[in-house]
Image (cartoon, rainbow, N blue to C red; front, side, top):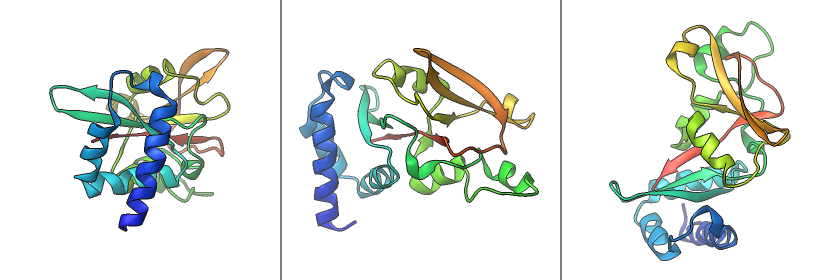
Length: 181
């Protein structure tokens, strides 16, 4: 990324950080900024999260690893990551009407990981997300081995976890990612 693009992204992230202090009380932007400036790969990944509509923000800090966790905090599942099935195996198993990509492939390409169900539920304690959309989450192998995958959303002021065939895709289903910095 060019220095100008990095500065622009840092400005966007700082503004979001300052407008949403309830997500990260006790954290200071200067420490986060220093970590970001020291790792161009993480900046690139955060830029991809931003470009695809994720609105990444800091939601957690791990003292043991000295790492901050950025998660997609857009109100709905990121627009640039919808209409995708769960993974490559699911995509290849479809006979007709294949989606253009998969959640797992996109996350890998972006250098991020899908949220776990636990991370998704923690995110929902910070606000109300996916009231009109849904998001694939990391699916346990036991479920995936049977051809399924899980996704979550928020309806009726309740967070739900559902299952579907991993090869399914819908215009309103995407995925939320996480990145440790």
